[in-house]
Length: 280
Image (cartoon, rainbow, N blue to C red; front, top):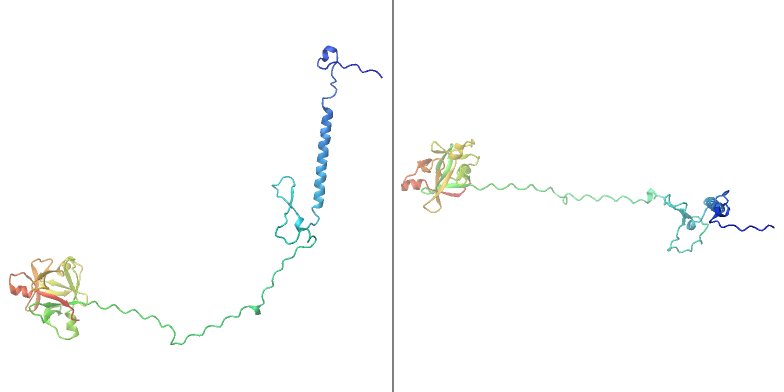
């Protein structure tokens, strides 16, 4: 055999006249080995996937049935269900037994349903609840009567539309005609107005006290308003007109009139009255 010539140093190929072999790329053998290894790996993976797919159709017991992760799990990972800790049987003991099928209970027959309760007998008429009684009407407000000071047995009384100072008998009509309601003054809240049983007012007209219906005018309100002025004896009052200051109601010939004040004991006695409880 011929002896191999010593290979010149490769760091200076051109100085020794030796040139590197450029017919093949450096590292070609290693590339072929890496490619063969990768191909073998891919083949093994494909074979394993095919085997697992063929076995996935076989029935498996419920306790060992694989659970496939959702689409979000990476490349076909498989996890097995963990057996319950509370199970009284070891895993695999009931292998091969089908899971029990739930049964539904049959509906109850009509005969087994509850019987309707008999209606309670109606209570006798004596025990039935009677309708609530109507509330009683409010009592009629008590009125007042106006009595003269110098004629204590005489009272104001409406007769034929005029107000007179009369003696009152026991008849109900007379007593009703002599009873009035004292209300807040129509023209002055600090004074009085007087109404009759039929809702009309006492007012002065041509300085004579009469009974009239309220016409809503300012003149009517003033004519029907009188202000009390305390006088002697105690508890008596004089009634002064609102629109005619200085004129007071007095009786003259037992007719109620509106007369100017007089510094006279007779005038004061005729113009003094007491407001007492109504006669009706």
